[in-house]
Image (tube, rainbow, N blue to C red):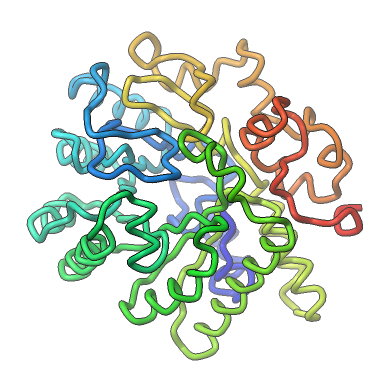
Length: 392
């Protein structure tokens, strides 16, 4: 994640990392990306079942639950292992996690163990009762996906009324004091909706929004032709920076992040340099601490069937199954060549990535995107929009 509000608008000072220390157990959620110990945030796709059928779903979720989903006993054992391993955050996803019959029990156990529990949801199933229960359990955050305004969102979600139901879910979370934010996946079919998303977070007083660059995985693999050009991506990032700064300048600060393209970090730094910002050097230090993409290191994924992946998008390459070995053992087993390489992928990237001056702060960007387009997981990420002059 690249914190636009933090880096570009100074919402969090560089000294905060030193003030808290860099151990994940001591860091608040907005600084976890700077932890030195790098225990992974774990995305747990608790179910493949979903009430919608989104065009870009990396999990290729559907109406029926998978027959091999982890049992409640297996899930609780997984959480115990994650706690013992030092995992700071468990993100419950799907499919639609609210369709899992034991989600509340799993959230309760996560919080009881002292880990932060968050969910990623389409928001349509958040009734008043559900919101109240989640809040009472101590859930830290609800991320609700929106792909644009009503017509665009409903088209992406394959269900008329999905937009209205998601907004209702947002209101229910706000009514009980549960922190809620938006998730938006950028592509050619909806990037013109970004201004409307900024209008929405201001109108509804939504404190957080994450803009995800498209990753070619699952049904999202069919949208490669809808990926933005490099010029379009630069325009979008500039727009996000401008709209975020406008909010701050008018006294309406929001937490704004971009996700899944670590070229955004150097791009923000270069823009600050161009603007002669006195904060540019502080931002560069934060980017060095962040270290860029952390697939297989600072983020990991457990699927509904117990398979362990480098991240939630890299679902064709499993490192093992928690039914046979604990997650902690799988994650630290460097006898798997790919796992060992991902722990320090800067030594393996090829092409322009290998000689890029931003490699220490980008981490080689998204390997799964490079593999999807070229067949070579160490090839340059095709979504990197920095010019040869900017990386020289």
